[in-house]
Length: 248
Image (cartoon, rainbow, N blue to C red):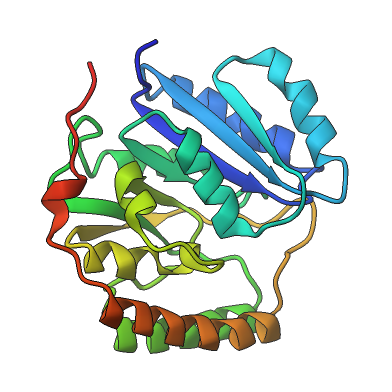
């Protein structure tokens, strides 16, 4: 079976009310943009009936695959599970809550050549019109500013769920629970450039946010210190070893 042009990984936790609409919209958009694509939805041990909703969806489209974590392991673990199963050279990530517009993935893909890997290893989505409340926006701006000053990752919105990354680059990164928040910094640390692309952020219409400002801040400080330590204690020979030939 020929490899898809692009793989899309969607982590989901307690998104039973939203995930069907997310998948349906994504399939429609990607069918008009790519010759071959695959969507991999990873249910991260949801406590609601997300798993049942996803299982019912499987009969509708062979381009959609579902993986179930037996218990919650976190967003980074869900992304890693999807990356391990992905068959494309480049893998897009988007959230399962409906706030990410799949058309933004198409826009991000236009910034690179999906058939090859060159100097760029990551295309990062930057939300130009965040729909979060004022407190969340302030906390995010503060965290982004602190992170950028310490890690020099050149990404104004690293928490955005929309990313397009070389699969092998992601899998070459040291794994930890908050990896998804530091993809730009670690991509650059591996010797690759990143491209920032403005993307659409939509208001949540179903379900509830899984994070609080206080929870993000407490965990984020320790994560940031850990990433600084990792980057100082790990060295790589350069990006060439991570490049692999493309498949027709």
